[in-house]
Length: 154
Image (tube, rainbow, N blue to C red; front, top):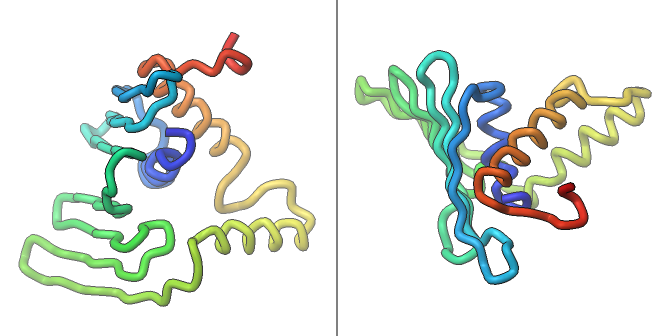
């Protein structure tokens, strides 16, 4: 969850904010490390974020955002999308194609460089508080799944 699951959690936090309720379940190997994890978040307005991450299956790295009028599908690897599709319930479909230049991390590196050059200590796009909320959510998931790091958790 802390390796590849963080991206799902980040997207839900970025789009929906802090959840009011978190449910989680994980498959643990014989060393207590999660090899797959499923988690869902509930929000004030009856919105639900449902996520899954795994190392034991070759699952697609996509994101779907469902709303009252349709859905947005971030295909390819959603954090560096090659294709974004908007499907509306009225039958309208739009596809937006983007060149995939790298693994997606260049966006983070560019923002860090821009912040340093501007003399900022945090990004306007993702604050220190946002990062702390992300860690809080991941710690809650770890706790619910029984994922323990002996030298980290007291």
